[in-house]
Image (cartoon, helix red, strand yellow):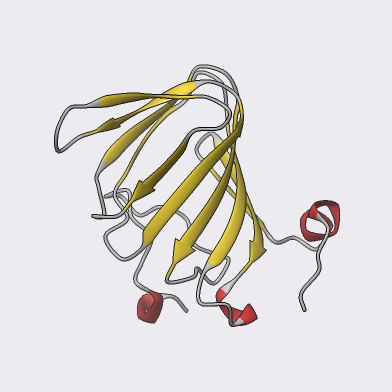
Length: 130
């Protein structure tokens, strides 16, 4: 059984920050679960374009307000507490935070914990991470 407290994970340095977001990595590849689990904070007023070519992601909004646009279809969806979205086709998307967004995220395959977004909005494939 794995039991962790958010504050301990932060204190131990298992968080990554990049342009206007911070991801606290609660479960990582080394935990052997087959997925990673993160609590991610996106700053109010920020906009992010991502395309996880090497990962599938599911996200649940815990707090805040924003929107997500599927760049393949142009369709935009409201994000608010209780909203879940899954990038089941490695969907290129833009996420906008009108208010600070607090998101619970699951990645498959799991991340190692040090990943930040590459120029194309993706994380490196697991075999490319050192």
